[in-house]
Length: 211
Image 1: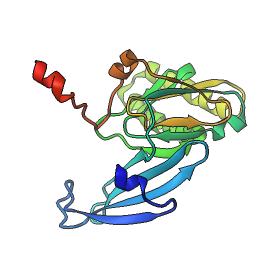
Image 2: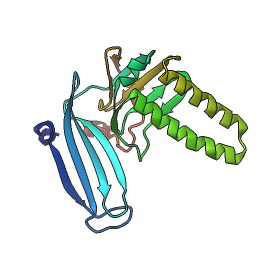
Image 3: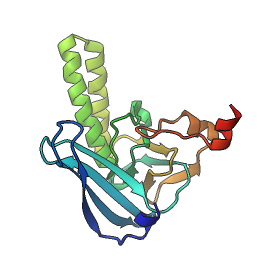
């Protein structure tokens, strides 16, 4: 982490990673790292792993300044609120309260820097795919539910319906950034209940020795 902290804002690095674990391409895997500063938040490094042969791609976001585990909340009430900045790392959990959507990180989770409108578009695209599957399975109830959520998302975008957006990260690498955003520290119980995505929790040596 020390080396990353010393890097300059705006710097882009392309580093070779070796062989691709997906297609087996020899020396086709690389990582592109871009460091930039987010106002009122600090330096962020976006890294994207890409295979030049098969197109495999995986992205993540890392804070280059130490951040404690926090819960960020904002209530979207008009179109301006849609531009609230979203920094989501691989260990960040996003919740869209009124529509009952929770995006929890899994082993293949990706990080990104976007805004709430961008997050809603990601959810919309996922719902459209899921809706098509449910339609093929004849699950009319699930199709109806998808349509209701899709309609609500459109009304949020038009400023007609409110939406409470939350993001929590046990590693402190995710955040919401904007004038209306509220935040608080996560409790230890909340931290323990959150997924780390592809990351693994390592117990301190003292605890391990006591077992």
